[in-house]
Length: 229
Image 1 (tube, one colour):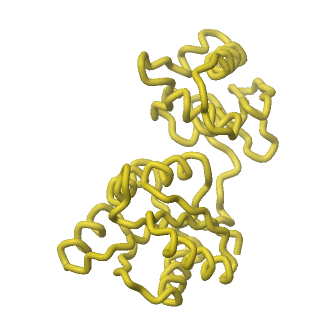
Image 2 (image 1 turned 120 degrees about the horizontal axis):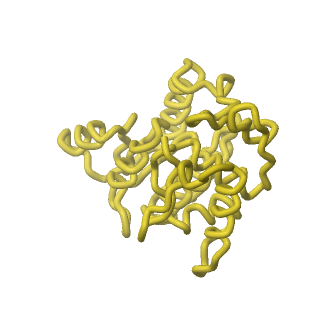
């Protein structure tokens, strides 16, 4: 199928059970043991559907759901031991597409994943066949197939790191990214220490954009950087 599923739950047994059944159904599965890890994965990976446990340490599933809905409309299934109508309504009001009460039959969970994937992708809500081949912000165009950036008619060659950073910026113009988030997107590694790699790369990108590159990539003091809309 080629779809990537995030399973976020602090109970290893549930993660392993869903992983096994979903993988047997042809999905690629990524696990997260808490809400913070789930958010980090969502920022780094292209997730097609998320299964979120409500009661997770660090950041609960509903907070993760709210964060997802700030930038994405991917299908989200909420997993919870709470089965009251109020709990279900809260999850759905926050943007969940489905609500599965624990304990559940793993075959039902897979069936619900299939249903949400089919409804969202196959029926056209976000069909992979229509996936964007370019990103456009102001007078910038990023060709996702050739990995080339255009400013008007000018072609700007990018390194692989610069391409991944510009892709992150142009997918969500106006959003502030921390140095950690930019590093993880550009170098595809976890950010371990505060070095100058991100600052140097941003400086090079601004130079390549020509003129006053600060008109495109703004420094937000104490937070990080954003691409102007």
